[in-house]
Image 1 (cartoon, rainbow, N blue to C red):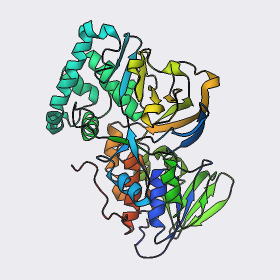
Image 2 (image 1 turned 90 degrees about the vertical axis):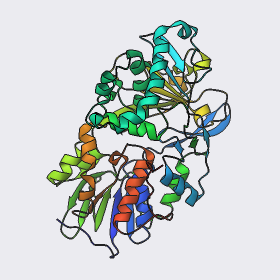
Image 3 (image 1 turned 90 degrees about the horizontal axis):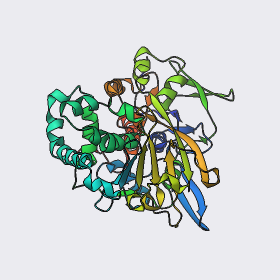
Image 4 (image 1 turned 45 degrees about the vertical axis):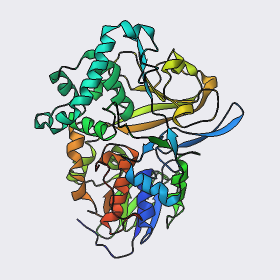
Length: 434
């Protein structure tokens, strides 16, 4: 075991250039020589900006990280302020199409009854009643110790929430947020779900934060951070092995090249990190294998068949379900209103489409994987601090909290903080502090 001391200048490798890795590399560069090793051909991880031309207009589209807000992304806001990254208001409306139940609606006054039959459907009014009941009861449930070990499904059954509330509202919202199969949402730890949704204003009719996006694409911040990294930035440098020794860390690339460093920051997904380690300790293996991932097919396109039938129900987030609970979540983001893409033709990002997308409308297709949070994952998060710096190794990733951009940034900031380097705004801010 080797725990490095602060104070000496080191040569460090950061594996992964998502928000976790690039933020750690940026701060660590103030006192150390830092290289970034990125497996893909471009930087950014889930920050992926695409240049598009639609309706003879040049624009940008973000297909991974899309939005943030000032309430629950305080460190990201400070980072953007530090680098002068602009922001613009983002519409975060939400719609649901449940094909099996024949329901379509959008969460505003104009869209609740976009499907005229909703107004005379008792089950629809029952769902709305449960939405208001959850809003009233969220704080009580968060304070109730008997909820500590319940899954979301167990809590909803105990509190007698209706089928329609689950299928037409809460599960679609959760599955869309975490890019998670709907069937797995009910196994999500109840308090983790409620705490996140409460902090983000998702369980309340009033008091929601104003969401923002980055005009010109979120890659602007990635480029700003990368511009201040002290060492080399290598893309297309896929790591196949990380072996720790008493005096160094050896890293083997897919090409066969071997590199040596004083320490390593593993800023990849938890499962990728475990696969890279040639000699994980039992504690490291136990922690990392607790975070399964779900792959998501992500298509940037202009096929408007993926939007609700009624234009009154078109929203920034459009969830669709065929009633098969174990299928990957299907959601379409309408970028014209979510990111302000300035064209008439609908520009969309669809995760896991339920039907084939017209090939002539596809601009780009790629895969993103997202962590799936069960009780094992939440419990494993508590073990992370004790492993940082051991064997010349630090871990970073959004999987260390809720799986979102602020969480990835916090993990990168914490790696630097453990070596005595703070961000320009001082202490790391707590997003859950009101």
